[in-house]
Image (tube, rainbow over all chains, first blue to last red):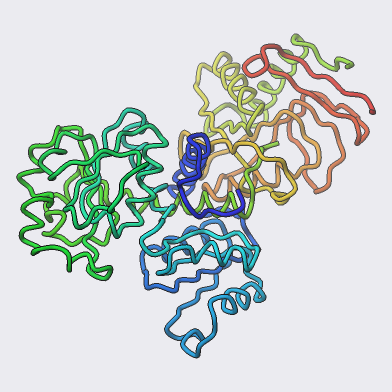
Length: 305
Length: 175
C-alpha cells in the first residue's frame, strides 16, 4: 500500500487486514505506557487546509503513539495567504523532511494531486464531500469490535448523504465487508444519481429503526446542508434519532455518529449518551486505525522472529 | 537436513529448564513465563505445565509480540504482527522470557523494550531452547536447552508439535 486515499479500491481482505492491525493498536493504547517505538525517527506532516480539530488531533496522537515526529501546517498563518500554491506548499514540506503527509482539503482530489507532486505516502484526512477513508475504517472497526463482524449486518446511514465524505467512504467499506447498507435522507440531501452504489434507500428514519446499526450524519451547515432543508424541526420530525424512536429499536441495535454532533437535531442528547451509542468508541478507535494506516505506509508490517 | 535434537531431546531439555528455573528462583512464587512469538509461546506453556506438575502451582503465561519494537522494521519481510497478552501486571514479578533460538540478540533487546513498556518487573531472565551464537549485542541466556555452534550462513529450524505437528531441531547446511 503506497497511499491511503479512498476505501473504494480496497478489497475485503485488505480491509480485514487493516482492521486486524488496528486491533493490535487498540491493545497498545490500553497499556500503562500507550506507546511503541515502531516509527521512531520518522516524520509525519499534517497538512490541514481545512479546519479540523478532532481528525488532526487523532492523527497526531496516532503518530506520537508510534513514536513518530509530527509537523503541523495551518493555512491561516502560512504563506498560502501570501499566494503560495498548493504544490509549492507540499514540496516545501517535503523538503523539510516529511516522510508521509496527512492531507485534508476542501477540494475533491487534492490528496491525489499532492501524492503525484511529492511522491510521498499520502493519507487522505478528508477531501471535500468526496472521501474520508480513516473515518470509514474506524467506523468499521467500531462495528466489528461490537458485533464481531460486519457480514450480514444491516446498517442504515441517515442524513445529509450528498455532502458527506463519511457516507461515501462508509458505504464502500461497509458493503465490501458484507453489510447491507440503506441510505435515508431528504431527497435534496441524497446524491442525484445512485446508479452503481451498493445501497438501497428508504424514505424516513422510521423505516430503518429495525436495523442493527443506525449511523446518523451531521447536518453540515458549512457545506450548504441546512440551506436545502425546510427547517431543522421538520428535519428532526422525519430524520432525527429522538428518544422515542431509539426506544423502538431492537435491544441489540446501536447508534453511531461521526461527530461533532448537533445534539437535538440528528441525535437526541439522551441517545448520544446512551450505552448503546458507540460515539465514544468511535473516537477512541480512530487513533488505533490511524496508527495502523501510518504504520502500514511508513513501517510495513513485520514478522516476529 | 541434519537433526540436532529429536522429540525426546526437546522434551528432556524443556524438563531440565523447568527445574533450573525453579531452583534459581527458589520456587514458582512471583514467576511469570512470557513466550516470544511464535515458538516461544508453546515453549513457555510447556514450561508452565511442567512447573505446575512439580509444584502444584499454576504459573501465569503471557505472550509477547515484538514486531513494533524491532530496530530493522524496513528491512524485514511483510507478515502479520502477533499479539501481546499479559495475564496480569508484571510489575514486581520475575519474568522469564522464553524463545526458541537465541541468535543475534536483537529479538531479545526488542522484547526487553516491550516488557519495559508493560511494567517494571523485579527481574527478567531468559530461557532459550537453542543458543546458536553470533551475538550482535551483549545479551546472554540464563537457561539454555542446547548450545549449537553454527556458521552464519547455516539456518537453525525449530519445529514444535503445537505449531508444526512434530518436535525437533535441524540445521540447514551451507548453500
